[in-house]
Image 1 (tube, helix red, strand yellow):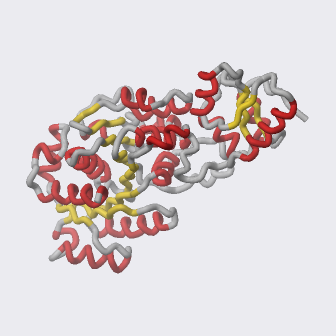
Image 2 (spheres, one colour):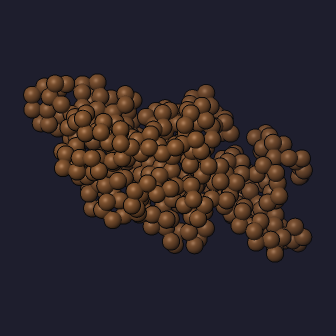
Image 3 (cartoon, rainbow, N blue to C red):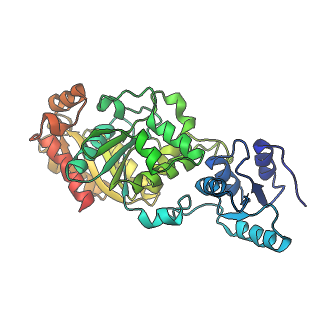
Length: 372
């Protein structure tokens, strides 16, 4: 039994109502995007592309959206049956890192790693660490892209004095949704701000968070790693799942940008503040990450000072984190308001205003540990 849907919303409604097992879609279906294909697959509906044999552009577009099985409009019944079986065999939910949204050629050429910079609530200095970490990696001779996916308070653009009226991350996600994001278009959206360092700016207003859908974030990061050695991602602090929306796989969720970045990341750098409140949040944050099966690439205690934790702050914090967080060698970044403020005022990185400062060397050690 088949059903002919009049448009994409009708197709998604039919899939949500379990009225079919396979959706036949054309590259000319208005509104079809990456999220729609993922929503169909998350609903256990196979997706079969109907494309003329000579329509290479249409097939390429559907492949960019995640469609993997195709059939010609005039295919005989036996071929159609085989294509339907093939569409049903595609996993409903892609496994982490399997490159489902990439072509075979992309899989062969992929070379960069994704490093997510995350920290608990309370402004521990995630963006300061992310910006300077990316700069140190670039100074070490690697091609780096810094991506701001913070849906709460994006600020990478302000740190580097970049105009963000047209946020690069939103444009990249929009292109990913429509199957037009590739290495060339990504390069146009991420300008070079320092030698070997490009930046994809974040949302200028937090109310635009629905533009950053999970599938688009994943595709964007996979494209980014095709053209660089390291992708540094600045994430928001909140990792809570939206319980009321978790039963609706179609609805966007505000925290999915950070959750997706953490799932895609090869390593995660965790940043906490060097005071009693920040350290408590850091320990709890590490416990939250332990349940997400992520690779911790480093733990950074930022703005460390004796006035907040007592005498011999370094040994105190090391002992505390080893006892309560299982962290043996955290990177301790001393408080240096004057130099950090100077870099922020100049719209640049610590290397340019305080190359010999301990705060800069501490972050540089994180970069060195990440790349071995």
